[in-house]
Image (cartoon, rainbow, N blue to C red):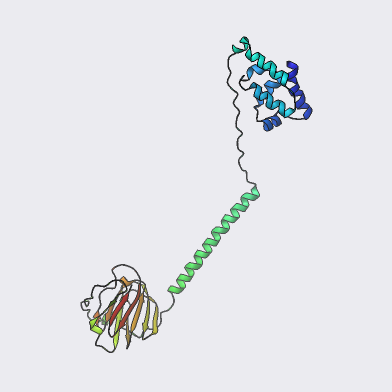
Length: 263
């Protein structure tokens, strides 16, 4: 029987296979291969011995019918039953190889990351510069300017009827006047666009504390970035605050018939 087991090693060497190659192709544990070639089958779990021999023999192209018959006879004998069961040799799973990056690949990844950061910073800087330029744009000359210390004493705001969003609010104080006068006081910096009789007279940032007055015949319109940052007087009477929250006002339209606020 030793000759039958030795055929495994002779055949393997004749084919030029190393034990590592056999392990890779058959998935058998190296200790199992060495035990089969040395005939130490008593070290292999009897439940798996015939299966291991078949796998190894099939890989090498060896006929092992006689060997398997002999093993079956030994397993059936009483003496074989007394052999202590040994644990099945654990087949160690192959460790997954870690991905290794070459120095060139690492440098490429770093270059791409740096490029992305540079582009992001450039775009952010460009947006910041454009915003600064817009904010520093000189406002056009208003129709008339009232000095803060010459402002007339403010009167109580005229009552405004409850209204829904974008619903006209009629001010009776301006309904009988032919000429319209609107004064605007800035409590905070805000963007303002003013149209008087369909002509844009002002478009820019109105600074905190500034007071502007416009006079028209048919219509005065305001577009304000922050409705809570301004106070408006129409024909010498203060109107109700546009909003208590910091939010834009799309349009304040002042006509001889009244005031319309579109939020």
